[in-house]
Every structure is written in C-alpha cells, then in structure tokens.
Length: 204
Image (tube, rainbow, N blue to C red):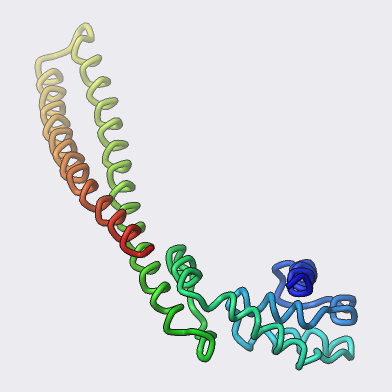
C-alpha cells in the first residue's frame, strides 16, 4: 500500500495536468505510478498513446507492463459507486473505462450523481432568473425616480407633464409584471431545492 501511495504521488508530480511528458519525465518516469494516476483519474488508453507520442520524441518507450499494472490498480479505485456519484455530481464525463472493473456499481453511482448535477443546474437557472428580474426591478425603480424628479421641475408644460405621467404609468405596469415574475420564480425555487435535497438523500 505504501508503494502505491508513493507511486501515485510521483505520478502526480510528473503529470502535473499536462497532456504530454518532458524528456526528463520520460526518462525517469515511474510508469507504474503514471498508470495508477491515469486509472484513478478515469483516463482511457488514449492517454497512454499521448505518453507514447511524447516520449517517442526523446527515443523513450513507456514500460507498458508497469503502466498497465498501475492503471489497473488505479481503475479499481476509480470504478466504485461512490466515485461514480462524485464524478456525476460535478458534471464530469465518463470515458467508459470501468468495463471489467465494477462498471455496474460505478454507473449506478454515476447516474445518481448525474441526476443531482442536473437538478443543481435547474436550481441555478431559477436563481439566475431571479437575480436577472431583481436587477430589472432595480433599474426600473431608478428610472421611475428620475421621472418623478422631472415632474417637480419648474416651468414644466402640461404636455410635458402628461408625457412623464404616461411614462410613469408604463414603468409602473412593467414594474408590477416583474414583481409577479419574481414571486413566481420564488415559489418555483422552493420545490426545486426540495427535490435536489431528496436526490442527495436518496443517493447515499
């Protein structure tokens, strides 16, 4: 177990989130650890092809046996129901790597997590709509304030006053419409949040 931990730590240092490896990394790479890291991250074998292409530039070939052994151990860590839920709940994709490594359990968790992710997105959409409507309400309130200040201006002619009053009536109508829209969104938000919590509770 200690060897696995050390190899994983070394692989993380080597990979560093890049798609290719440097010459030094190819020459000194811990291929077991790199394979473990790729497996534990749910990478498919195209990742190995990237390593092969990178290292070919330096005349180095990956140690395939070590890489595959490490990748297999990494996949055992990745392909669990709990990790499937985690991957799905943050909206990450699945590259089909768990065949033979507990795919049924992984997909069960992944589907549950995906449902949570989709509902999170729905709650976010409602909240964003509420913020948008609130901003429009504030903007209308500022416009109304400007028109009211113009109404008390000296020397205002009757036609000018009537035009301002008509504009205020229109703004007031729009304001009330936005308030109703905001109230409807607020009412919608509560059950959406409850459903999200139900999905979370039913998953684990």
